[in-house]
Amino acid sequence: MAIENAGAQQPARVAFYNDPKFRSIAYQVVLCVLVVLVIYAAASNAVDNLKRANVASGFGFWDQAAGFDISQTLIEYSASVSTYGTAFWVGLLNTLLVGAMGIVIATILGFTVGISRLSKNWLLSKVATGYVETIRNIPLLLQLLFWYNAVLKALPDIRDSHKFFGSFLNNRGLFVPEPLRDPGFGWVEIAILIGIAGACGFYYWARKRQMATGQQAPVALVTLGLVIGLPFILFLLLGMPLHFDAPQVGRFNITGGLALQPEFVALLLGLSVYTAAFIAEVVRAGILAVSHGQTEASYSLGMKSGPTLRLIIVPQAMRVIVPPLTSQYLNLIKNSSLAVAVGYPDLVQVFTGTVLNQTGQAVEVVAITMLVYLFISLFTSLLMNIYNSRVKLVER
Image (cartoon, rainbow, N blue to C red):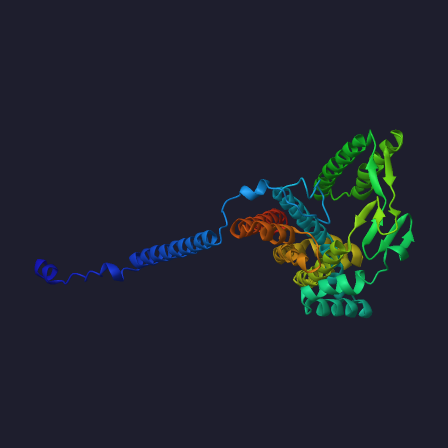
């Protein structure tokens, strides 16, 4: 036995450069070094170019006077007093406004069209199919130009404005009476918040009781009473602390009131209609992913098509709908940067456009804009992932 063991050959040692573990670590180190070198070369090149162009780097421009007007502002802004930093916030709020409203409108329209495509009504189904196939295959930029030039700019000028209910509609936008708060209206706003909180609490209680006992509660009526009825009663008791500033037509312009500009409407319509076509297909795919046996079981219990769709099919389909729906929301937010095509003062037009041209701080301005869009996208994804975790199928 000793002779046999002595004569046995030992396995050959593998060279360290042929070791898979070593090579894996080496490749990662080389890749990291290359990435660092590329970043360093790009940064050095940018610094050299700024020096040759006599452009100072840094964020000193942030507190300098802007010196330009912005057509739509949600916060106080003045061309002679406000700074570039204020202009940034104005553009950001305009972007968030069109993004939030676009998501709501596109979701409602997309779900409606997606469900309509599966309707047994032949005409409704074909109209929804035609909408999806037409809108999805036309570039968004062309649709924005269509809404802005062919629809909104075709409206009459100020002198021939359409008048209705104290409002005026012309090629400069829709001018409506502006509600102005009087002393005491703050209590109404507090009542609205309390009503919303109460409605949410009642909804969760009713849902928990229904899951335990099967008994349904009048959630819609209670929500209507808390959110609208309670504040309205308080509004009347306080003597209606609200008045309206009606728009007045002048010789060359309209003063007073609240203006809804055609640039905003064109961008909102374009983004909503375009994104809704993709959401419709997501909804249709999600509904088709639910077994048809669910529908048949519901009908066998005597449920009609409406409650079946609302209470059985759509809740199960949401597990399939939410992930691609998140992508469509992100696309809508990023596509809002096309606002420059119709003259809407969003973040890209105001900050990456006007501010960059006036200050020459290209690196800083573009970096800030990219980080803002990154943060908005990540925050939107976070909210949708939280919702997705609530509707996904949990394995027990």
